[in-house]
Image 1 (cartoon, one colour):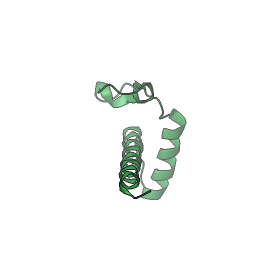
Image 2: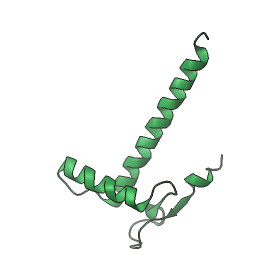
Image 3: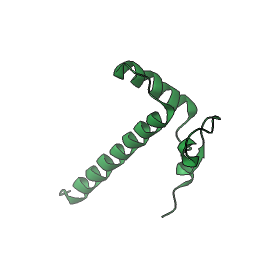
Image 4: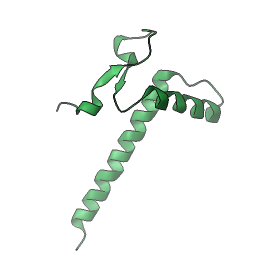
Length: 81
């Protein structure tokens, strides 16, 4: 299955460090969102969160939300109307 346009990866940052795919992220994930994630989680974890880790965090939250949405849709489809 081909990712939707909003899920197509775009270049992140300009450092070029790491493996070729390390600087890719979906279009919905703005640089501002990534920077905010880094700030919030760095404070919460009392350590520096790297950009790639922040991208992973955001992707995981998105997947968790999608899972919850699918679960609710199945529940609603099976409930009597």
